[in-house]
Image (spheres, rainbow, N blue to C red):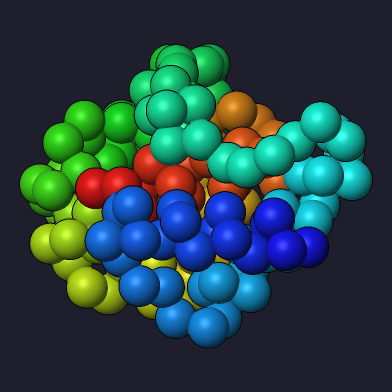
Length: 137
Ligand code: HEC
C-alpha cells in the first residue's frame, strides 16, 4: 500500500497536475483492479497510454478508429468528432481545467469511447494508462 501511495504521489507531481480527491480515489481503484488482474503490475504508464490512444481498430460502424479520430493527436488543441462533426474541447488538463475533474464524466466517457474504438470496455490497466497519458498533457 505504501508503495502504491508514493508512486501515485510521484506520478501526480511529475505531471504537475493536482487531481481532486475523487479522481485520486478512482486512480487508486484502477490500480487495485489492475494488480488483481496482473500481480506483476506496478504502475500505469503514460507511454503505453499514448500507444493505446493512437492504436487504430475497426470500431463503431465498421470505421477504422482510434482515440485520435475524435480528440486529435495534439491534446492541447480542439478536435472534431469523426461521426457528428461536433467540436470537442481539448483533452489536455493543462489548457482545459475542466478535464479529469469530474470522475463521473471520466468513467462514462472512458467506457463509451473504449467501446467506440475497441468494441469492448478497457481493462483497468488500459484506462489507467490513457489517464496518465492525458494527465501528462
Ligand atoms: C467517436 C468520437 C470519440 C472517440 C473515438 C473517442 N472519444 Fe473521448 N470523448 C468524445 C466525446 C464526444 C466526449 C465528451 C465531450 C467532451 O468531454 O468534450 C469525450 C470525452 C472523453 C473524456 C472525458 C474527459 C473529461 O474529463 O471530461 C475522456 C477521458 C476521453 N474522451 C478519452 C477517450 C479515449 C481514451 C479514447 C480512445 C479509447 C476516446 N476518448 C475516443 C468522443 C470520442
